[in-house]
Image (tube, rainbow, N blue to C red; front, side, top):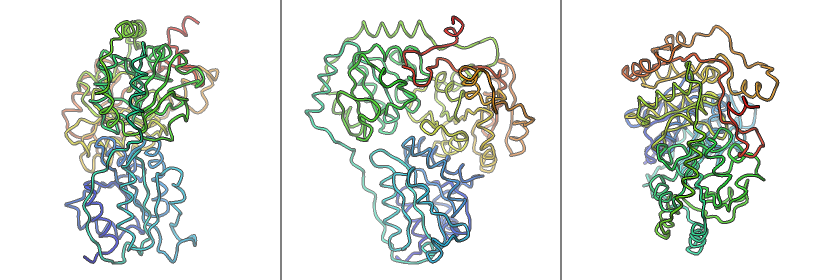
Length: 558
């Protein structure tokens, strides 16, 4: 059938099963928006308040559903406003297709109005980038973009289309999607070698990363942990990949990991990394990381093998596929003595906080209790992010969405909107600090426009909390540009943007506020006022071994 470029874009989106697109229109992309208007019953478009919000919403939609998220923007500043969201998705391996339109082909490269080489700008932060200058190549390019975004290690792909291509016509032939086979780059001999390492281990420890979520290996990971009788820690991105209420679970590892995880990994004799990439925030001093252990790594991306930590053995492939083949080869292990040692570490070093006043950990524990750990939690970046990772017990995959690799302030609200639209039967709550919230708080208008029933919790300590914590501990309490004691009233802002708002100043007000927000089934902001000097513990100083983990009690002793 004969279609113009804009109609081809819409037909390709439908082919890929896309039901929701996040974006913001402009001159260069008007033809595509006109086609979307005519297909609005098949593809829902969400108009965000800012293009960055569109990218974060597409990211949140992708993380919550496992599908490819889609965002759109016009040329020039519209396209560049997507960059932070694209980089966020790239660092956390989120499947995303960003579609931008550019000036017409004759105007390319001439510094034309609202022209920018967005493919060049985003080259380092995408799996691949395309610029389409011929309508005959458009359909195949879009199909390739979706294939690249979701295959192997997922990530964002940019497709930039010149405006004349969106108007030009050509024949379009629909295609059926084919299932992607899982990545497999190992042999039976490789599997047998891993079995030998596991059989020889006396003190194994499982280190779980975001790859477990992406591969959908939740059941296989649980079975693996039972078979080898090992404790399990996770990274920020691995939250929900293993049941956070399990007796085997020791909490997060790394800079703000639990003492049980950090000390346990430092004592183990076999560390098994499942879909984890040994980032600096996890390993601390690489020369001292798990120095008593053999290390084996399972990862879909061969580039991650031996990148940060030298491993003794590895399997490159899809984690769900690896474990489905490895688990039947394993004998049931008994490491009761080791498990008891780890259990004692958990009992000796529990997470704790000052329970005498309103605090973020208390708020998060109340959210966990009221939602029974079944909500989707999104966060921004900083102290509240770490508290959300520590004190909410995630029991299912794709229920903790946070910017782990890039550490993007302002990520959470857009991601929460995307998650709620992707999983409408789930309760979606964004936890943000006051510094993060103000960066993209205008997206509350998006939530109110479409009556998206998200709950936005603002943990307001009137400072940039995590930066202040570092200034307190390592910079002589010189609080350079981290005090936010201004006159912004977040409740009034939320109400002005069409949302309900509740302010909480005492512990007794927390549970009623959460319950009211849930009952409203509408966008609600809950502002929680906490002390400015609350700190996230445990903590490992940058570059120190994770065995040097300390908490508030250790500081008092010093």
